[in-house]
Length: 89
Image (cartoon, rainbow, N blue to C red):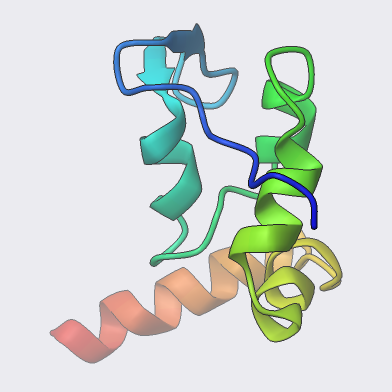
């Protein structure tokens, strides 16, 4: 039985390319409505075995939702945001 991989502690931070400041792994792990940020593998692989950690921690459905989905185009995302804003009026 393999040993469970541990995430870096909350005091260990790296620079987030999306936000532009220091953040810890715990933030990256849940920032996408409870799911990991889509860039978490790219950002954390140099610091620990993030892929193995997440494969242990996520269900296969959560993994697919996070890493195997086709991203929306910028136009589709903008149109969706416009529709949401209109609906709030």
